[in-house]
Image 1: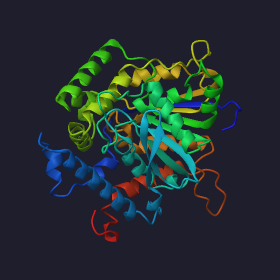
Image 2: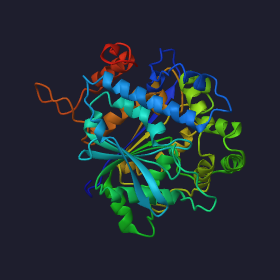
Image 3: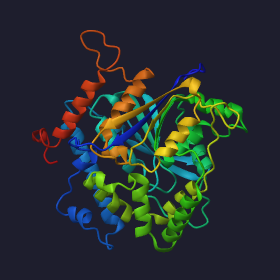
Image 4: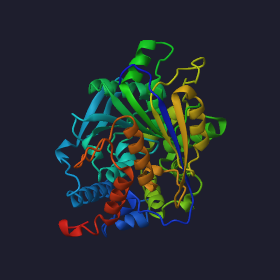
Length: 421
């Protein structure tokens, strides 16, 4: 991205209840085989890590089945899906790479209790029905020790702070020599990527300008930029104590459900709520999660401001997304107040949808997809569908209808083209 000033676009997406029929979410399409379904419907304390891996592997198989079923829409080279372990000052970090590396890079960072696959797979599964993945290569960055197959860290391991996680992002960007990137973060990941944009702003101005010059855009979901309050601090202290002492427990699972969904679980998709609760109950590395939570609990406020007096001015286009049921609605509004109004357009989109889940990537992927595509289109990306006559940008409404029709018909209407879905 050039050094010329950019206009800042901030979209605050609220999901509010309505009587409309819910649209099938991407996660609802995951059908489990007979031997795996009891693990999801009736989880038991004896369910071990091997069974958790089996469930996740089966989800991955369903994902591949789904993608092959819509191959008439979009041909994906599965040889382009790869993983790398990148050396950082905190050890090796797993990066999952999806797409052609010659395409424009998009980096992602995940939220608490999740890794990059569990946080973003379902959303990119939804989006990839369109030609989105032909334009971007996605680099999913995992926080140390948070992936499913990670080894448990010893007690002596010095887990990175939030600023350290931002440093990891910088190391990954440098490792792959990414000169221009779009950054997409959820929850804690949104905090990390926003922190990356203004990292060491007072100590090294040149570094700050370099990071911001590399960022074409920031897409932030449920972003919090302030330090933890006393109530959050107390809850997190309890989580850390239980995770280190007894492993996964009801208190921490309930906290993670609140963190991702908010209090109105009854208004969210029952299948998604059930599957995430099972996933959290059987996380394989509770001690690693405790370290991640401790870093987030001890976070400092991110130094950004409108006038530059109390922090850096963010000269990067920003898209903020939050569900009405998210516990972080006010925090996202607070982030917006710290953006320079002379460089920003704040759009509050009140969307009449059937639920108010805070986990918008899974529960309302069509809303997030439409917002992201329109946002990137305004920045000069997503110029697809060159038809008989020159069309500079896609018809987003037609694209969304196509995506939803294919989503609702996948693994059903096109089941003749695959052996089993």
